[in-house]
Image 1 (cartoon, protein in one colour):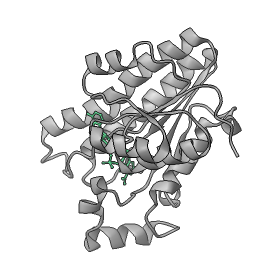
Image 2 (spheres, rainbow, N blue to C red):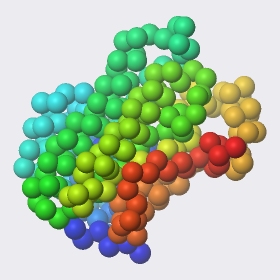
Image 3 (tube, rainbow, N blue to C red):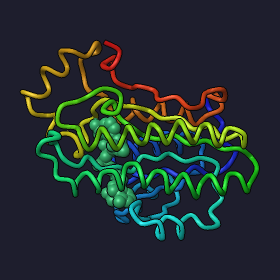
Length: 242
Ligand SMILES: NC(=O)c1ccc[n+]([C@@H]2O[C@H](COP(=O)([O-])OP(=O)(O)OC[C@H]3O[C@@H](n4cnc5c(N)ncnc54)[C@H](OP(=O)(O)O)[C@@H]3O)[C@@H](O)[C@H]2O)c1
């Protein structure tokens, strides 16, 4: 359906649920994929299954990101690596958790964007970046002071990067998913007293699957989205629309 023939696509968070699904869909569509995470065993399994390359590095270390991406020719990036942090109010937040969640979700994505965009500009073929944000950046969600703030920062990274990189033919977009029952989210959103009232307010009334997040990411990476840049696309069953 899509042709991914312009160069490799780096997917961070590939050892996790949504990133792994994105790698599987991209490889099935014929893309050359470089899968990142820290868990080398999980990445090796994914490589065996899909034929992707692997590139472990730590999003919190600029040295690690820079060394991994030095001389790496890529056309696309999915910034999917992330951390859920805490469920806490502004009154009780652990500010060290805030720092860490900002560090991984916003600063980490910016570091990858920094070195990837330098490469894309050097190669002169344009490029595409998709940032995996969250519904938690679009509306105020209880308990999400740190995580929601980190994803709101990521949405701004999307907008400003789209502005700055457009002249090089590089598109930058974000997706804002609702909950997928990966280990990152199940411990909180799986509680009946949290799950039911939330789903009762969502038009589609159910959680997303990993593949339902991966498919719009793949679309935004493809030339089918060639005139789309700077958007934050909710994939939330209509939750933020009502
Ligand atoms: N699940 C949801 O409900 C949901 C909803 C909306 C948005 N999101 C976002 O979607 C993305 C993926 O979430 P997921 O549910 O698939 O989570 P997941 O299964 O927990 O995966 C998280 C991924 O991030 C990587 N990561 C975390 N810290 C890292 C670091 N310091 N350096 C490098 N990689 C790091 C992990 O790699 P290692 O384990 O190998 O270190 C793993 O691949 C995240 O950005 C998340 O915020 C998730």
